[in-house]
Length: 414
Image (tube, rainbow, N blue to C red):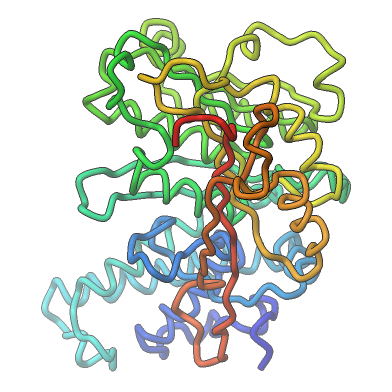
């Protein structure tokens, strides 16, 4: 049987649900999870055992996104899934009632794990999927809960993000989806905020506002994680912080604003807190020729970008934006500003990826007597599992590779 197939052919028949074991039913639920509430591909770093999303495993190898989308958007298949989940919940509740009344044990039901807890877990998962299938997933919209934690377990940051369908297959609207690069960058920031300049170690930091900018923010995951992280760090309790999440495409920007609103508790909090987050339109290609809005009129200490270079000219446009937006070195007591970029090493975008190293030279290749310029300060390769660990024996052991660049001013204090 093909791994990618419609629910009507994959799920146990509704009339025979009672004859299937807990393991088989859990397998079916995991399959539906991968269809209607999937994990972001390539978001699990191999060297760190910290969950990137809400603990769900992805069941499908989505080599053909159009086929996946066809199944996901098929009203009949979704309706069948809803009926199947409803029937499953009813059967599970029957099993629970029988077990509680001691009329029959789960051993008698033939389940491999004779515990009431297993059926309760199944009920919870089925009910959650039922709500998803009947709600936003019906419109091709997916909402995920992302959870990031520090290695020592002292920090935990959660964010809820909604992905929307691409705008009529417009390649410019790819930011409507949450990509693995954003997950990787967000996870790295939570694990080690000081590495990204998100600390209060410098002498004058307490009296300075920290300005953070995200280029091509997409669904806003990285910006929101930074905001929530700084809210949770004691060293930032009284320090002013301003995060600006930018994007270009109208539908992407609208969804970005919606995600920010959904993750910020109230308008009152936005006004009274010393921390704020703003979304704004930014066209890299015309940045140098158009007036700047107020939220982009000051220099930024930290600039972030995840999976934002997929055309040859993007690196050039980004460099021009950074020259006008990133704080230049001046005060030796302040940590140097930097641009942190994570991009996937896609076989189909090798040329575009290589433009990073042609536009931003390595520090060792820059004339020390020349003008200050932006250079690559460090480079790191990152390997991620494609879809987590649960592969149902299909040999889905492919990896997704990323490269992390730290880019800054050549004459800045390193």
